[in-house]
Amino acid sequence: MSVFAVDKKSGLLTKNGFQPTAAHPRNFAITPNGQFMLVACRDSHVIQVFKLNKKTGMMVDTKQDIKVGKPVCVQFAN
Image (cartoon, rainbow, N blue to C red):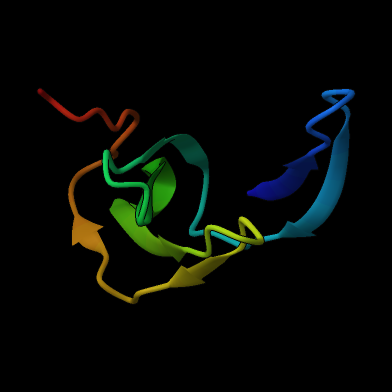
């Protein structure tokens, strides 16, 4: 997953870094509280859970993978 910063005035993106994931990430979603990002990694059969740093946008793998067969989409219900 690539991490970018957004310039608030111009809207331009600047690459801040990169976070490796399991094989074939297909989709991701940020939790409604903004604290975590879940990444559906199809070929690894997991949804990885990353803790988000709100200042930098960088992620830390929580090592709390959700095992599921070939996940391709992550959504949160209201």
